[in-house]
Length: 61
Image (cartoon, rainbow, N blue to C red; front, side, top):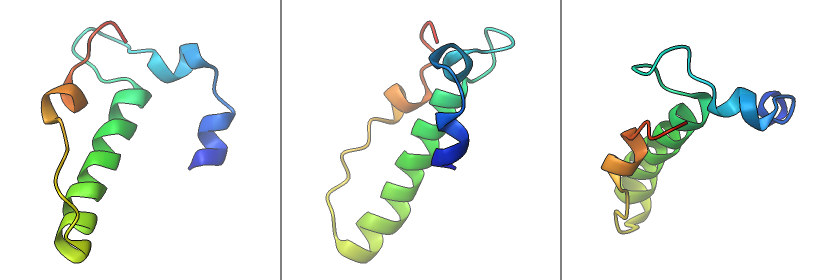
């Protein structure tokens, strides 16, 4: 996946087709947060520092 993302411009990564849609950047943040929450916390007892509101915020991206 990192190879695919490196091929995109910053504009491509933050682009959203509509205001209600998520950008690629937002989806990656959500996926990373989920991986952290489900794997690191459960298996490695890492404290949960996820900010779900920030993860799901579309902002201006």
